[in-house]
Length: 162
Image 1 (spheres, one colour):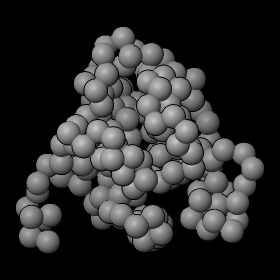
Image 2 (tube, helix red, strand yellow):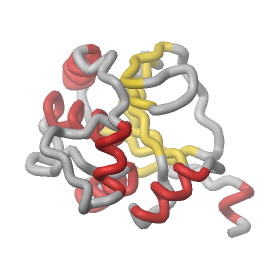
Image 3 (tube, helix red, strand yellow):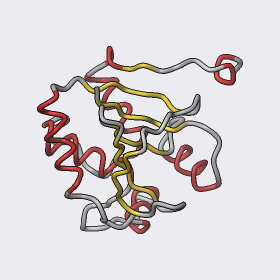
Image 4 (cartoon, rainbow, N blue to C red):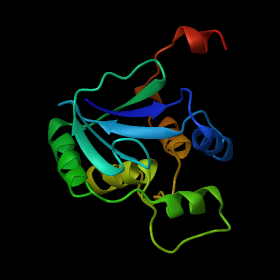
């Protein structure tokens, strides 16, 4: 089953700014397919830009997951569409324009939540009309508002004590 994985764990200054300005606990989102491949966009680390990595990553307690109700055929279409987005550079200016609304841009931004939402809209026809200029928290809120029963958030010791 396809999953969206939302990162809420420790982070750097950019992570904290994203969370503050988007009013939520999440700073990153990835799309994982049943075959273990994951699609994401990142502006730092080993993988910069949009990538498909087939490493069967095991997500730790700092990730919440949302299960996406899709058939295997729908998932195949989504994965195929994701391949067309590989190599798109991470859009730092788009992220800044998202975080600072007065610094708006005309072209669509390409950061983690926007590329994942693009896959969901174009291949699974989910959330029609939702702007691609959304944060990981905004994407999570979209799912909660329309598919409240598909959320699966592991409770960790660290979060249980908060």
